[in-house]
Length: 565
Image 1 (cartoon, helix red, strand yellow):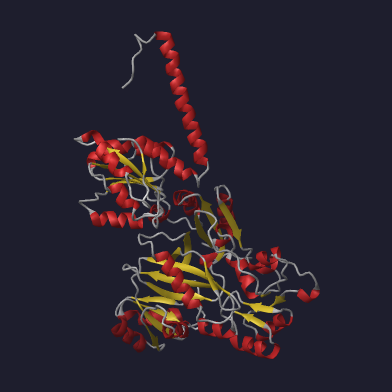
Image 2 (cartoon, rainbow, N blue to C red; image 1 turned 180 degrees about the vertical axis):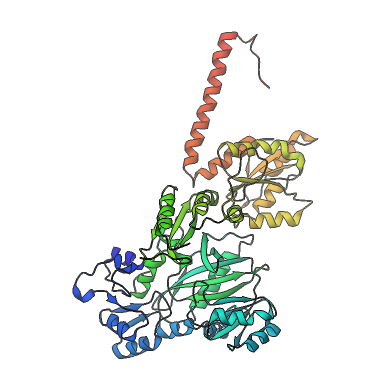
């Protein structure tokens, strides 16, 4: 993927990897013999030196390289190596990495060194409690090198699983989400981060990535970026860094680990961001201006294609299925052999909303190689779309319909029915400005971070709900005055429409739930143009209804004409 980006910039890439048809070598052909790819292991000092002799800049795709050779090349030849060998040396030993981050006052959970003995592992249980995570310090990736110690008796099995590698232990972290941020660092030390994303791991391997991150706390995404940027600033050298983190129940964020290279959790950037992580890695190591890291689509998901057996036919069949899904881009890696647990490729799904992306993801999760039951996974990550008229909220709503009391429901239902008509996912609930003020604050503050784009708020009497919500969310709020037992709703209308400067509420007529729904559709249409076409069609149906009434009035006469109530 790095080579593909390089080819678009006329940047020559020489690859060191085993085999003449290694995946990266399939992407770029050498323009002359001096740029021929190198056949060999990335751990072979002689091959690394051969690669260096053909390059102006060296960068890595994996951190498990011979750092000593890189240090010698850097001092002997003065060749640029990014990230710096000193950075790779720190990061490739996860215990040293954690020590570095702690010393730099970065947020990490408790960890301790461990000897590769049963007694030392059992001692960890007394220090960290159970369960705890036992990790290999080196040569660990994609979950290989991790072992969850649940009982003291697991020590023997843990040593057997992790072999004779050096170890360390981490206190068990009860996170609510795993999140990640890709950070690009220039040769001058400036950093620029990509949007925070949610990552989902399966069998200790990255399975899914959702962008952007949605949580009930609107501050989390920006805080995650600051945590990641601060951590990357402590290292040397240029390029992209993948920062994996844990989000805790109380909103705190811990750094799990850092990869000094483009990372699986950033593959979504190829289709979803204005500049992919691969292109920005090239720009950084070549001292070129960095590209924008902003999302260019409202929502995206990345799904890894993991081998379930030695059969390549399963992978090809899945890729064929993926090609039928709108907004889906398939990346197969050209690996010569398939085996269980091996990353064979990935795909990215983009869409105009979270609901669209999750709906497109559903058939892909169902078709993944392996064939095991996935009902729980489907329900969690790709639930069935909201069924019109079901009376239940969408799991990925674009519109929030709220009302101060259940007595307002008859007025607000027409708004829901309009959204059903236009297939717009929504939620409907009760939020009282006066009787549930804490719920009101939480709802308003979390609305945009959860993915909502418009709020329709209905209230009667004092009708403070729409204005209070509008004061606490950047989203557009549509107010629906509800006719009460006195004053015919005029009091509500005046309350909602007379908002102070700086707190706008788009107000419809008394009991105007239907128009509120239609206004929400039009607001969404500014970012989802297909809705304008749908609204235009809807308006034509209104015209047709009126003309039918004109024809009927002329035929039967007004004395016999019956008006439908």
